[in-house]
Length: 194
Image 1 (cartoon, helix red, strand yellow):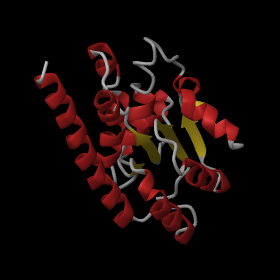
Image 2 (cartoon, helix red, strand yellow):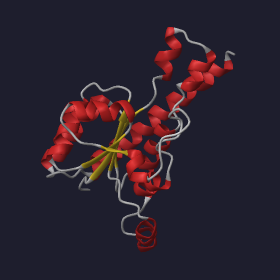
Image 3 (cartoon, helix red, strand yellow):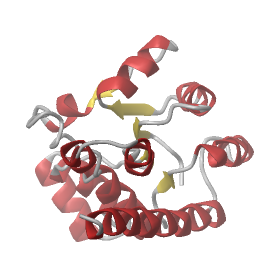
Image 4 (tube, rainbow, N blue to C red):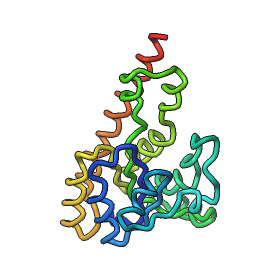
């Protein structure tokens, strides 16, 4: 799958400049939010604010920013399903071919000691929703949740002229479910001690 549009929203920016720069080299349109958008602008890229794409602003102190049909429809649509593609056209939804997201650092925050309210605010909602959607639709969407995989994605895209292989997409999709299961378990464990 050729990558034409990507959402990048990360708390851990380690190694991101290499991957983001490669996306820029291939002319990928980047959608982003908050601190990630500022970071990308700082390395010379020009990401579009997710709210500008959806036509709906970030609200509720950032609790709602990527939870929108234009984001999830762009991720979840089956590219060779005519009904899905008609819905895309009807509602002005564009394909999203890559999701680069790492989750709010819940485990790190609670391990340092924090208030209950701080712990709750570090439970990511939009991130898990996007990465699970992308993993479900790995046939068409590349999902990257671990900075350790940026090199694999870069190599694969360079070998495939800006596209990714299904083998890589499947590997990355499996990793999503491993990470989200551990994330949810950490939240459960924390709440169970209260």
